[in-house]
Amino acid sequence: MTLAAGIWHQIFDFTDYGELLVLVRNSLVAGVALGLVGGLAGVFVLMRDLPFAVHGISELSFAGASAALLLGANIVAGSIAGSLLAAGAIGVLGTRARDRNSVIGIIMPFGLGLGVLFLALYKGRAANKFGLLTGQIVAVDTPQMSWLLGTSVLVLAALAVMWRPLAFASTDPDVAEARGVPVRGLSFAFMLVLGLAVALSVQIVGALLVLTLVVTPAAAAARVTASPVLLPVLSVLFAVASIEGGILLALGGSIPISPYVTTISFTIYAVCRVAGRYRTRRWGARRAVPRPA
Image (cartoon, rainbow, N blue to C red; front, side, top):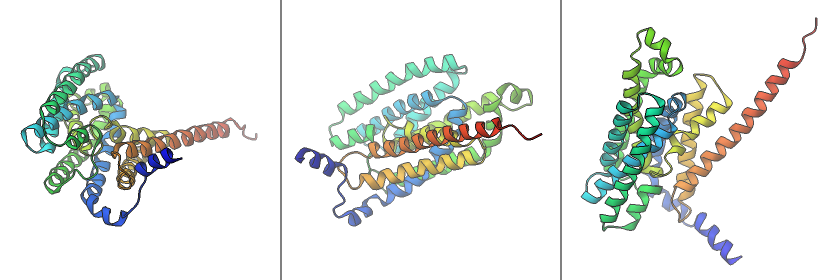
Protein backbone atom coordinates (compact mmCIF):
# COMPACT_ATOMS: atom_id res chain seq x y z
CA MET A 1 0.00 0.00 0.00
CA THR A 2 2.85 2.37 0.79
CA LEU A 3 4.49 1.78 -2.58
CA ALA A 4 1.18 2.17 -4.42
CA ALA A 5 0.39 5.34 -2.49
CA GLY A 6 3.82 6.75 -3.32
CA ILE A 7 3.39 6.05 -7.03
CA TRP A 8 -0.10 7.56 -7.02
CA HIS A 9 1.24 10.63 -5.22
CA GLN A 10 3.83 11.09 -7.96
CA ILE A 11 1.22 10.83 -10.69
CA PHE A 12 -1.55 12.86 -9.06
CA ASP A 13 -0.83 15.38 -6.30
CA PHE A 14 -3.03 18.44 -6.32
CA THR A 15 -1.56 20.17 -3.28
CA ASP A 16 -1.45 23.94 -3.88
CA TYR A 17 -2.84 23.33 -7.34
CA GLY A 18 -4.36 26.80 -7.66
CA GLU A 19 -1.04 28.53 -7.03
CA LEU A 20 0.72 26.28 -9.52
CA LEU A 21 -1.66 27.16 -12.35
CA VAL A 22 0.13 30.49 -12.77
CA LEU A 23 3.28 28.62 -13.79
CA VAL A 24 1.64 27.03 -16.83
CA ARG A 25 -0.25 30.02 -18.20
CA ASN A 26 2.06 30.26 -21.20
CA SER A 27 1.90 26.51 -21.74
CA LEU A 28 -1.90 26.56 -21.78
CA VAL A 29 -1.94 29.29 -24.43
CA ALA A 30 0.72 27.45 -26.42
CA GLY A 31 -1.32 24.25 -26.09
CA VAL A 32 -4.27 25.81 -27.91
CA ALA A 33 -1.98 26.94 -30.73
CA LEU A 34 -0.37 23.52 -30.95
CA GLY A 35 -3.77 21.83 -30.96
CA LEU A 36 -4.85 23.93 -33.92
CA VAL A 37 -1.64 23.31 -35.84
CA GLY A 38 -1.34 19.62 -35.02
CA GLY A 39 -5.01 18.87 -35.55
CA LEU A 40 -5.18 20.52 -38.98
CA ALA A 41 -1.82 19.25 -40.22
CA GLY A 42 -2.72 15.76 -39.02
CA VAL A 43 -5.63 15.58 -41.47
CA PHE A 44 -3.21 15.75 -44.40
CA VAL A 45 -0.67 13.52 -42.66
CA LEU A 46 -3.29 10.76 -42.76
CA MET A 47 -4.47 11.56 -46.27
CA ARG A 48 -0.91 11.47 -47.61
CA ASP A 49 0.24 8.54 -45.45
CA LEU A 50 2.99 10.50 -43.67
CA PRO A 51 3.01 9.33 -40.01
CA PHE A 52 6.49 7.84 -40.50
CA ALA A 53 7.66 11.19 -41.91
CA VAL A 54 6.44 12.95 -38.75
CA HIS A 55 8.64 10.73 -36.64
CA GLY A 56 11.62 11.27 -38.94
CA ILE A 57 11.23 15.04 -38.84
CA SER A 58 10.94 14.99 -35.05
CA GLU A 59 14.38 13.33 -34.75
CA LEU A 60 16.14 16.17 -36.59
CA SER A 61 13.99 18.67 -34.73
CA PHE A 62 15.37 17.11 -31.55
CA ALA A 63 18.91 17.42 -32.95
CA GLY A 64 18.37 21.09 -33.77
CA ALA A 65 16.96 21.84 -30.33
CA SER A 66 19.83 19.96 -28.69
CA ALA A 67 22.38 21.96 -30.70
CA ALA A 68 20.67 25.21 -29.68
CA LEU A 69 20.69 24.10 -26.03
CA LEU A 70 24.43 23.34 -26.26
CA LEU A 71 25.23 26.68 -27.91
CA GLY A 72 22.97 28.72 -25.65
CA ALA A 73 20.75 29.75 -28.57
CA ASN A 74 16.96 29.85 -28.84
CA ILE A 75 15.70 26.27 -28.53
CA VAL A 76 12.56 26.87 -30.59
CA ALA A 77 14.63 28.33 -33.43
CA GLY A 78 16.98 25.34 -33.31
CA SER A 79 14.06 22.93 -33.32
CA ILE A 80 12.49 24.69 -36.31
CA ALA A 81 15.78 24.69 -38.23
CA GLY A 82 16.21 20.95 -37.69
CA SER A 83 12.62 20.22 -38.70
CA LEU A 84 12.82 22.28 -41.88
CA LEU A 85 16.09 20.60 -42.84
CA ALA A 86 14.53 17.15 -42.43
CA ALA A 87 11.26 18.12 -44.13
CA GLY A 88 13.11 19.65 -47.07
CA ALA A 89 15.28 16.56 -47.49
CA ILE A 90 12.26 14.24 -47.39
CA GLY A 91 10.35 16.47 -49.80
CA VAL A 92 13.19 16.63 -52.34
CA LEU A 93 14.58 13.10 -52.11
CA GLY A 94 11.42 11.14 -51.35
CA THR A 95 8.95 11.88 -54.12
CA ARG A 96 7.66 8.29 -54.13
CA ALA A 97 6.49 6.39 -51.05
CA ARG A 98 9.27 3.79 -51.24
CA ASP A 99 11.98 6.43 -51.68
CA ARG A 100 10.45 8.56 -48.94
CA ASN A 101 10.50 5.75 -46.39
CA SER A 102 14.12 4.97 -47.24
CA VAL A 103 15.12 8.61 -46.79
CA ILE A 104 13.27 8.80 -43.47
CA GLY A 105 14.92 5.59 -42.30
CA ILE A 106 18.29 7.21 -42.95
CA ILE A 107 17.45 10.58 -41.42
CA MET A 108 15.94 9.23 -38.19
CA PRO A 109 19.01 7.55 -36.69
CA PHE A 110 21.25 10.36 -37.94
CA GLY A 111 19.15 13.00 -36.21
CA LEU A 112 18.83 10.98 -33.03
CA GLY A 113 22.57 10.36 -32.97
CA LEU A 114 23.33 14.05 -33.39
CA GLY A 115 20.87 14.95 -30.65
CA VAL A 116 22.43 12.46 -28.24
CA LEU A 117 25.89 13.84 -29.06
CA PHE A 118 24.87 17.43 -28.38
CA LEU A 119 23.15 16.49 -25.12
CA ALA A 120 26.22 14.52 -24.01
CA LEU A 121 28.34 17.63 -24.57
CA TYR A 122 25.85 19.85 -22.72
CA LYS A 123 26.83 20.34 -19.07
CA GLY A 124 23.75 22.17 -17.87
CA ARG A 125 20.66 20.98 -16.03
CA ALA A 126 19.64 17.39 -16.67
CA ALA A 127 15.99 18.45 -16.75
CA ASN A 128 16.68 20.48 -19.89
CA LYS A 129 18.05 17.38 -21.62
CA PHE A 130 15.18 15.17 -20.53
CA GLY A 131 12.61 17.77 -21.51
CA LEU A 132 13.65 17.73 -25.17
CA LEU A 133 12.74 14.05 -25.33
CA THR A 134 9.62 13.92 -23.17
CA GLY A 135 8.42 17.53 -22.93
CA GLN A 136 8.33 20.08 -20.11
CA ILE A 137 5.22 21.59 -18.65
CA VAL A 138 6.76 24.95 -17.70
CA ALA A 139 9.29 25.14 -20.55
CA VAL A 140 7.49 27.88 -22.48
CA ASP A 141 8.83 31.27 -21.40
CA THR A 142 7.89 34.61 -22.97
CA PRO A 143 10.51 34.61 -25.78
CA GLN A 144 9.60 31.04 -26.72
CA MET A 145 5.92 31.97 -26.62
CA SER A 146 6.54 34.64 -29.26
CA TRP A 147 8.28 32.09 -31.49
CA LEU A 148 5.55 29.51 -30.95
CA LEU A 149 2.64 31.84 -31.65
CA GLY A 150 4.34 33.49 -34.62
CA THR A 151 5.18 30.15 -36.21
CA SER A 152 1.69 28.83 -35.48
CA VAL A 153 0.13 31.79 -37.31
CA LEU A 154 2.46 31.14 -40.27
CA VAL A 155 1.49 27.45 -40.39
CA LEU A 156 -2.23 28.17 -40.12
CA ALA A 157 -2.02 30.82 -42.85
CA ALA A 158 -0.15 28.43 -45.15
CA LEU A 159 -2.69 25.66 -44.55
CA ALA A 160 -5.58 28.06 -45.23
CA VAL A 161 -4.05 29.07 -48.58
CA MET A 162 -3.27 25.55 -49.79
CA TRP A 163 -6.17 23.64 -48.16
CA ARG A 164 -8.40 23.03 -51.18
CA PRO A 165 -5.73 22.26 -53.80
CA LEU A 166 -3.79 20.18 -51.27
CA ALA A 167 -6.90 18.18 -50.41
CA PHE A 168 -7.50 17.57 -54.13
CA ALA A 169 -3.86 16.57 -54.70
CA SER A 170 -3.91 14.30 -51.65
CA THR A 171 -7.12 12.54 -52.70
CA ASP A 172 -6.36 12.00 -56.39
CA PRO A 173 -2.89 13.30 -57.40
CA ASP A 174 -3.10 12.09 -61.01
CA VAL A 175 -6.38 13.87 -61.76
CA ALA A 176 -5.21 16.95 -59.85
CA GLU A 177 -2.02 17.14 -61.90
CA ALA A 178 -3.97 16.68 -65.13
CA ARG A 179 -6.13 19.67 -64.15
CA GLY A 180 -3.11 21.89 -63.60
CA VAL A 181 -2.70 21.60 -59.83
CA PRO A 182 1.03 21.88 -58.93
CA VAL A 183 1.10 18.54 -57.13
CA ARG A 184 4.87 18.36 -56.57
CA GLY A 185 5.10 21.96 -55.44
CA LEU A 186 2.23 21.47 -53.01
CA SER A 187 3.83 18.29 -51.70
CA PHE A 188 7.11 20.07 -50.97
CA ALA A 189 5.32 23.08 -49.45
CA PHE A 190 3.28 20.84 -47.16
CA MET A 191 6.42 19.02 -46.02
CA LEU A 192 7.85 22.36 -44.90
CA VAL A 193 4.58 23.24 -43.13
CA LEU A 194 4.63 19.82 -41.50
CA GLY A 195 8.19 20.46 -40.37
CA LEU A 196 7.07 23.63 -38.61
CA ALA A 197 4.13 21.82 -36.99
CA VAL A 198 6.41 19.08 -35.69
CA ALA A 199 8.91 21.59 -34.33
CA LEU A 200 6.15 23.31 -32.38
CA SER A 201 4.84 20.04 -30.95
CA VAL A 202 8.31 18.97 -29.81
CA GLN A 203 8.41 21.93 -27.44
CA ILE A 204 5.55 20.54 -25.35
CA VAL A 205 5.45 16.75 -25.68
CA GLY A 206 9.08 16.14 -26.66
CA ALA A 207 10.63 14.52 -29.72
CA LEU A 208 9.75 10.94 -28.83
CA LEU A 209 5.98 11.41 -28.57
CA VAL A 210 5.19 14.07 -31.14
CA LEU A 211 2.96 11.64 -33.05
CA THR A 212 0.36 11.95 -30.31
CA LEU A 213 -0.44 15.53 -31.39
CA VAL A 214 0.08 15.33 -35.15
CA VAL A 215 -1.34 11.88 -35.93
CA THR A 216 -3.57 10.44 -33.18
CA PRO A 217 -6.24 13.21 -33.05
CA ALA A 218 -6.80 13.07 -36.81
CA ALA A 219 -6.85 9.28 -36.74
CA ALA A 220 -9.48 9.39 -33.99
CA ALA A 221 -11.61 11.88 -35.90
CA ALA A 222 -11.40 9.74 -39.05
CA ARG A 223 -12.94 6.84 -37.11
CA VAL A 224 -16.19 8.70 -36.51
CA THR A 225 -16.61 10.90 -39.58
CA ALA A 226 -15.63 11.20 -43.22
CA SER A 227 -17.01 14.73 -43.58
CA PRO A 228 -14.39 17.12 -45.04
CA VAL A 229 -15.70 19.80 -42.68
CA LEU A 230 -16.25 17.82 -39.48
CA LEU A 231 -13.01 15.83 -39.75
CA PRO A 232 -10.61 18.77 -39.24
CA VAL A 233 -12.91 20.28 -36.59
CA LEU A 234 -12.91 17.09 -34.51
CA SER A 235 -9.18 16.60 -35.08
CA VAL A 236 -8.47 20.04 -33.65
CA LEU A 237 -10.83 19.51 -30.71
CA PHE A 238 -9.20 16.18 -29.87
CA ALA A 239 -5.70 17.65 -30.13
CA VAL A 240 -6.56 20.64 -27.92
CA ALA A 241 -8.29 18.40 -25.37
CA SER A 242 -5.24 16.11 -25.24
CA ILE A 243 -2.66 18.85 -24.76
CA GLU A 244 -4.69 21.02 -22.38
CA GLY A 245 -5.81 18.04 -20.31
CA GLY A 246 -2.26 16.74 -20.23
CA ILE A 247 -0.91 20.06 -18.99
CA LEU A 248 -3.52 20.37 -16.26
CA LEU A 249 -2.99 16.80 -15.05
CA ALA A 250 0.81 17.01 -15.19
CA LEU A 251 0.68 20.07 -12.98
CA GLY A 252 -0.59 17.85 -10.18
CA GLY A 253 2.24 15.31 -10.46
CA SER A 254 5.99 15.02 -10.58
CA ILE A 255 6.42 13.18 -13.87
CA PRO A 256 6.79 14.61 -17.40
CA ILE A 257 3.79 15.88 -19.30
CA SER A 258 4.00 13.41 -22.19
CA PRO A 259 2.42 10.36 -20.43
CA TYR A 260 -0.66 12.41 -19.60
CA VAL A 261 -1.02 13.79 -23.13
CA THR A 262 -0.49 10.41 -24.78
CA THR A 263 -2.94 8.69 -22.41
CA ILE A 264 -5.69 11.22 -23.09
CA SER A 265 -5.03 11.11 -26.83
CA PHE A 266 -5.06 7.32 -26.92
CA THR A 267 -8.23 7.18 -24.84
CA ILE A 268 -9.99 9.51 -27.27
CA TYR A 269 -8.83 7.34 -30.16
CA ALA A 270 -10.03 4.14 -28.45
CA VAL A 271 -13.45 5.64 -27.75
CA CYS A 272 -13.74 6.89 -31.34
CA ARG A 273 -12.69 3.52 -32.69
CA VAL A 274 -15.41 1.74 -30.69
CA ALA A 275 -17.96 4.40 -31.63
CA GLY A 276 -16.99 4.16 -35.28
CA ARG A 277 -17.33 0.39 -35.30
CA TYR A 278 -20.74 0.61 -33.63
CA ARG A 279 -21.82 3.25 -36.12
CA THR A 280 -20.69 1.11 -39.05
CA ARG A 281 -22.53 -1.95 -37.78
CA ARG A 282 -25.69 0.02 -37.12
CA TRP A 283 -25.58 1.61 -40.57
CA GLY A 284 -24.98 -1.78 -42.16
CA ALA A 285 -27.93 -3.26 -40.26
CA ARG A 286 -30.20 -0.46 -41.44
CA ARG A 287 -29.20 -0.98 -45.05
CA ALA A 288 -29.75 -4.72 -44.70
CA VAL A 289 -33.41 -4.28 -43.65
CA PRO A 290 -35.57 -4.98 -46.73
CA ARG A 291 -37.89 -2.23 -47.76
CA PRO A 292 -41.63 -3.00 -48.07
CA ALA A 293 -42.85 -3.55 -51.58
